[in-house]
Amino acid sequence: MRRGIVTGIVVVSALAGILWLSGLAMTIQDQFFSAAAPPADTTKYTKEKKADNREIYIVALGDSLTRGTGDESGKGYVGYMVDQLRKKTTKPIRVTNLAIKGQRSDGLLKQLGQTEIQRQLKLANIIVMTIGGNDLFQGGEGLKLAPKQIEQAKVSYLRNLDRIFQTIRRVNKDAVVFYIGLYNPFSDLGDAKKTSAIVRQWNFASAETAARYPNIIAVPTFDLFALHVNDYLYSDHFHPNKDGYKRIGERVASLITFTEGDEK
Image (cartoon, rainbow, N blue to C red):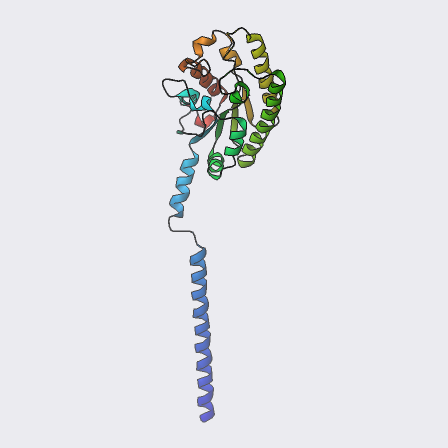
C-alpha cells in the first residue's frame, strides 16, 4: 500500500515537472519570437517605402552653376530641367541641391566623403553635377594662369574627377549621372581662340573620364554659348542668366528618359 502511494507521488511529480518544463519552453519561445518579430507597423512602413520608390529623386552636386547663381528667377538649370521632366512623367519629382558656390573638384571630393551626402546619394535615381569651372577659370577671374599651370590644374582636376566618379559609383551603382561640361564665358574677348581651345581640351578629357564608368553621361554645353554668348550670361560675365540656364536645363532633360509605364 505504502509502495503504491510512493509510486503515485513519483508519477505525479514527474508529470508536474514535464508540464513546468513545457511551460518554460513556451515562454522562452514566445519571448524570442516577440523580440525577433518586426514592429506592429511593419506593413505600413513597407507600403510607405514602396510609395517613396515610385518617385523620382534627383540629387544635384557641384558649384555655383548647379546652385543657379545669376538666374533672377532662382530656378537655375535644375529648375528648368525639372519643368521639362514633368512633361515626360506622372511620377512625383523631388530634388535635393547640395551644390556649393565657388566649389572646386577637390572640395566636391571631400564633400562626397560626408555621411549625410552619401545617404542622399544612395536614395537618388538621377544625379546631376557641374564641376571644373572654378578649377579652370579661378572663380570667374578668367584664364590668368600660365600654360604650364593650366596643364597642372587639368591633371589635378581630372584626378579629382575620376575619384568623384569612383565615389558616386561605389555609393550608388544604379543612378544615372549627368556630368555637365564647361562652356567658355570669355568667347567674345580677344583671346577667345585660345580660351576656347583650352575649354574644349578639358571637356574632351572629362568626357573620356566619364566614359570609363557605367551610366555616367557627359553633357556638352560649349555649343550653347558659342554664339552670342552675352545673350546668355549674367551681368558678372561668367554665370549664365535665365536664358542660359534654360538652355542647359532643356538639354539635360532631353537626355533623360523614363520607362513606358511612367510616361504620360
